[in-house]
Length: 318
Image 1 (tube, rainbow, N blue to C red):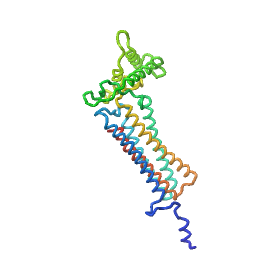
Image 2 (image 1 turned 30 degrees about the horizontal axis):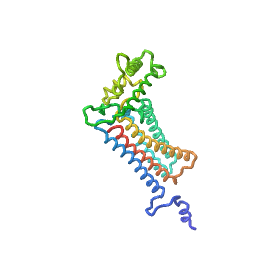
Image 3 (image 1 turned 135 degrees about the vertical axis):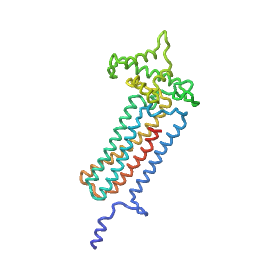
Image 4 (image 1 turned 60 degrees about the horizontal axis):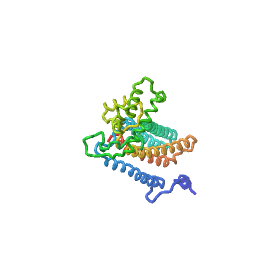
């Protein structure tokens, strides 16, 4: 056997190829991503249909549900930057520069961790303010009018049981605050505690004054969309962390947590891949022949990035 023949056998690719000279691994990844595109298209399409089906002006604004646009923008930049670093990692391993490849993989991993850190911070804010599916005050108005636009023709549903349950929930929260203000980081003579006591008295009522209705309570705890009005609302009720009244809020929370939750799960999947690659590289097992592995991992990460580029404007801007 000639030297050329020996070299030919030694460097034969470790993967099979299709008839159009596409590595089967890449073809499999593209087929997988097609199924993922179908999955997220269904989620996003459902969100759009539900949102378009609500009365005009009835869908919660980002400020009302504690979404901060600048945090979403930062996360978008982080994912785009991490997509760039994974490309640099592929270029580095293709040129046999393992150290640079590991550096860029590490930067991509850090970008994904930062993304998840910001998302965890946002989720924490939702939990603290009870903006969770089935927890938000909703369907309180017997007339079915959404508070954001009293003059509109659209109607929101009304559920008397849900209305009474909402009032009881807020009453329980206020009683806990008044009974143990220190546990809620409130001083005994603070304005927040006085606000909590006054609202609790209005809910309980007295012989001279009947208890306020769930709708009146909801109007007080309805976060305004206007920036200046919202600042006043936050100053008065923000530290109490009471369950807010947000028409269609439970529907919004269900779609938000479903879409961002599944996206976060895909981000975590990418982080696991990066950790595996880094471990393999630090053990000396990462070679130029693994360029395809890095490329396929990059394709998956680009998909995660593209999905977020759709979610960001839908949830934070529109």
